[in-house]
Length: 230
Ligand SMILES: [Mg+2]
Image 1 (cartoon, rainbow, N blue to C red):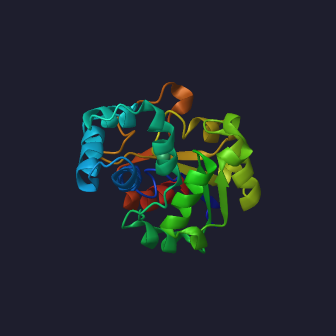
Image 2: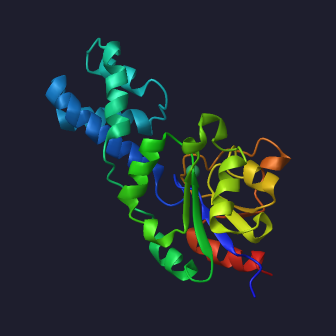
């Protein structure tokens, strides 16, 4: 009889590459700007993507408008809306479906994801993974104050999965927020520390933020779950 009952996943950069979402959003913005601002779509997309690959994470649209000689800070909120409300073209990491197929039946499967509710719901629906999951919790539905590292979304997912924290594991990519709340409740935690991941180089800010285990590939998740079952 396995000790572990429930496996709960993070969404961004755990089940799919967050970079793909960003680039998909940039495409939507470039398409919108081609019509509304006269910035040629291919060029507009390329300059947005360059800013991202140069490491720009704030003021991207302001800087982008300046690069295209558009003095239009007033339009940044609209560009953010286009970005956040676009229908994302994203896919799960290639190995994810097989991993979920392996886990389904032996474990209950859950999701806990932070971020603006509508944005996360659109990502979730684009990924097409819902049928594998027994419970899905978007922390934003509990209010901004209950985003990770709050324990609240973890409590809720365990309630929905009817699983005790000590028999459950959370798998995420961001040591600043993914393991603290889960650990507070007594869940096991696994850091999926993928090469080139957005948050892969962050350090846990304190002892309570450390994961129990670390893996570098999703396939290792399966063997680490075996370890947790020992
Ligand atoms: Mg994440």
